[in-house]
Length: 454
Image (cartoon, rainbow, N blue to C red):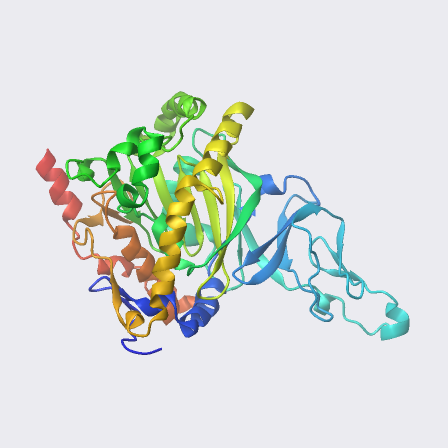
């Protein structure tokens, strides 16, 4: 690395451009973030029956996620403990066991080594099969979503999601039916650093009026008024931004859940039919969130748009490329026609060739590859929008920003990114649990604002 090596400045809300380009930074991310954080693997709806499996990634490590006969879920590294060959080459299926096609070693649904060809003759019964099981992954679930983690010292998944569960429950549980993912995922390669789409999805309402102006003009609806970032839009009254302890965050645009759908009748009706139950369960403040459109990221590399209902996992492929997996997120108890409509609209907008996906892809690639130049990557990026107009809220946990147009969630993402990069272990991270929000110094912002409004 050259030039300014202060990768993230949490005081002045800036980041070195090297975080999007430098190979040493990427290698450190793999070691200290992807090898320690909880990573999204999928959802129970993708592996509904015992024996069902999918193959996926945890950063650049291939893993198998399998539904066990006892109803639990196990994950393990998709590499044979003999000579390292990939065990399973299928994307998904149902299997009683997994057979390596190199030498025929057989692994059970849980990754245990169960059979070796000619074992007694070739190995003289000396193999320790327990020691040769495929390397296992910690697996925990929340509201049907399945996460994996390599670090035994990491907090539980519930603690890792922390206060962000307050928000996730609003839509992942909703009126009670929960969500499911429609697969298989669309897969594509995008020439960008993994953090560029993650930060875009975590709360970038600012780009919508410029990047997507033409598309929004054609789509119409609630968000069409954002085209051109018109100055007469009352941004401070139309939504909020949020960031939480472990870098998870989102922005919400009020009363706009189905706004990007051209055909939205079934989805709109579902929301109207269920909002009353959400209000009864969670209260009016979370009903507000339920009826809004979210752009959201779960640290480090899972993002979704609630309302549009596209669901993304950004698998890193080095510092300058990602493999994008795109699912559609739908209410489990919606009727088949509504699910199908939501999926069609999600693909039309944020599928591999979606109208809005292509807009974003160009920007994400440019934001990465501009840093190829040695002078360029010595510069810094700015994320000061809305700084000081945020703080603890009497209802919503974490730090809450005044508007959906802002960078509160950016600052929260990079605050935790820096914390993970700097910390040698999870104990060092946990030591900051009581002081993490000190980088947001305006402690009385919401108290003063709400008092003034009375």
